[in-house]
Length: 201
Image (cartoon, rainbow, N blue to C red; front, side, top):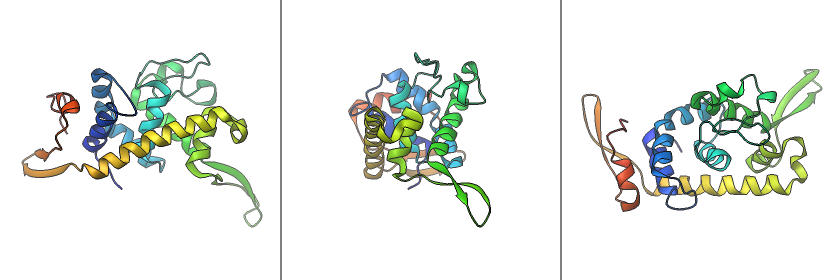
């Protein structure tokens, strides 16, 4: 199911009152970068809701987050395993693409192809559940309780947002020039965030 920047923004805002609490400022920040998240997910063939869940669990949408293991940025990528520096990973767009690239890599494994006589990457067994565990725990992910718990949290949040998005579609009402008026579902807990002039979708 495709999602627009506005649709993802609304799902993140709704989740902030449910399984993924965020401050109003963090929701606004997430909404400002929702299109970049969608673009990064699309480039690496990933689900944007899963990516949004990963960012919530990793950094709570804190762009300059640095962990004790020196993982940096929104997606908490380790500079020693990436071409970017920690400073670069603190730039939201850079972190979103680096995180999507890393997750896509963990979703595959190298396998020798007898016909081609070379190693090729094939889908990892276990799907996204195992891929997320590996993103968190690295090569020991198969037996990692921490990785499984991490994966469960992300998939739960992502599924919640996707379900909310399906049940509360953003419907264009009219289009006048470059501006589109939308019909929004009414939710008091997020209206003060969504109906803010800062958002121009």
